[in-house]
Image (tube, rainbow, N blue to C red; front, side, top):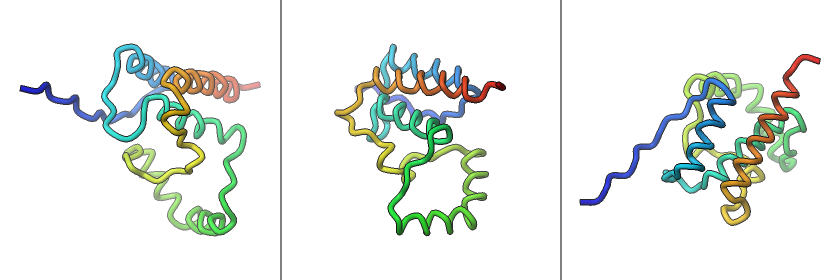
Length: 128
């Protein structure tokens, strides 16, 4: 009889440290991917979105800017509340620039990128 695959976990971290501990344990102990992304891709993606408030968001193509503005003033506040309460669901659309190709980022590189971004964010958020 085949060994059952581990169940997909619902992730909700209370701190950056808790997130990094989980990421490090996945890298160290191994993981089963339940989607199309590797650990490195997921960590790189999260690092990019954490970096954007500090460095600026990628500029979408001109036609999309109007759509994003319309969404910002209509549905975005409700979406934000829902995401903060329930988290992101797998398969949600995202900016393609934030999805590294699986062969372009190793798990180690993605984890390192996430750690560096968290360190930078801590420095950014500390009172001056």
